[in-house]
Image (cartoon, rainbow, N blue to C red; front, side):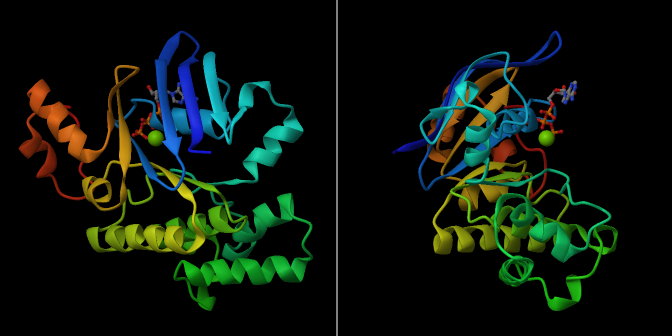
Length: 256
Ligand SMILES: Nc1ncnc2c1ncn2[C@@H]1O[C@H](COP(=O)(O)OP(=O)(O)OP(=O)(O)O)[C@@H](O)[C@H]1O
Ligand SMILES: [Mg+2]
């Protein structure tokens, strides 16, 4: 299967507010696929539709070849088990420790005994660079970078085939953001999965994204690789220098 996700003629809305108006794109196996766009352009809403937390107004989303709109709850759960998600604001449970937060997905979806769940959780916390000292901390005791790492560990425990990341480097200093990108690439290399990545970060796009869509005005303004985007922006007279000279974390596409 070449395409892991196929989105066709997707329309999403909050009441009368149309967020995506007839958008179509594919996510291919093994790629890092970017979702870009200005604040409020509908990136997180698109993610929520892809991970089946929201239902589109019309159009279809196929994941692993199945049209998710036609599946039973049981079948959707089976697909959800094959996907890992790092949410924009971490979505860690404030009353649970780091170790408990990471183990949560396994408690929910696996039949492993508690001891195995703890071991897998510890293994993933180590993989994402968190020491034993972090195990019993609560989310309010963590730095922004640590929260992202805990979120990544939680997203990885079920060994996903698709990893969804919503703004994984936002709020991190440039060094930490670069390290986080390296970490994503490193575990992608070793575990072999595809990534759907929402980002504002130009360096991330340069360093790890293979192809991307750029959302604007409820439509896809552009889809393709960064190289193709250069040709596109030339044609459309977009000031690329201005666009690409921004530093990490800046909202660089504002004028795109
Ligand atoms: N639950 C909701 N109910 C009503 N409107 C919503 C809801 N969630 C988002 N919206 C609106 O939908 C639009 C898209 O929001 P979304 O969060 O998807 O944007 P985004 O591209 O992820 O933005 P950001 O870069 O700031 O994270 C915004 O105008 C937002 O106000
Ligand atoms: Mg968002």
